[in-house]
Length: 303
Image 1: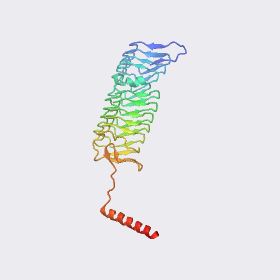
Image 2 (image 1 turned 180 degrees about the vertical axis):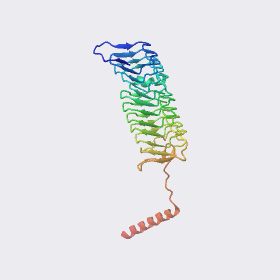
Image 3 (image 1 turned 30 degrees about the horizontal axis):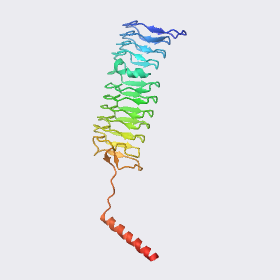
């Protein structure tokens, strides 16, 4: 067990490089607010380490700091951390749950965490954005995105083969290009501040069968749902066609069922005709003509 208590002094402490490397009996580490930096390889290959508690004074986690800690199942990165070195948590074969408290932590996911192992990610309230390709081709199964997040970069969740459900908070205004491309998404909740769904945002999401698009969305760009071969139902709550200037938004417009409000102002939805002008039959023409004649006769009698 390693416990470094909080300090009332203004000076900070670092855990030196390789300080506890290969301490295979070490199971618990708690670092108080006096520790601001964990140097590279500080806890590398501590194979029995199961619990790590980090304080909000920590700013740096060095490269390979917890590399090969095969008993570590979860970690909470505090919002104070602004630097995480390469492979800091790589080869942690049981690290399935990660809480990322800062933008820097989210940005370092690809190079610092075992993306083929980590399944559950929680983002802290200090996180304001998710960079492009942040979780690309990872084993991610679930992610909690707080309302503090205002933007999500292109390809952020692309090729996430195990990610089936995502809620995009109302703080986000755009779904970027290829955000969910080639993912296993079956359900997505889009916040009512999203105004734009960019090109290829859901490209080849073959498991997606239906989607609800809020009234706030005024623009859906080309190929946004291209390759979504099982998408059969779209529920749109806006009143105007959001994709009139785009082409090839959907793969199967002929079989797509689109539901819009009664007040919807257009006959088309993203290139698909959803309303047809009523054709007046010949009998209707006769009826209208007779009505006109009767009204004219009545008018003549009155005068």
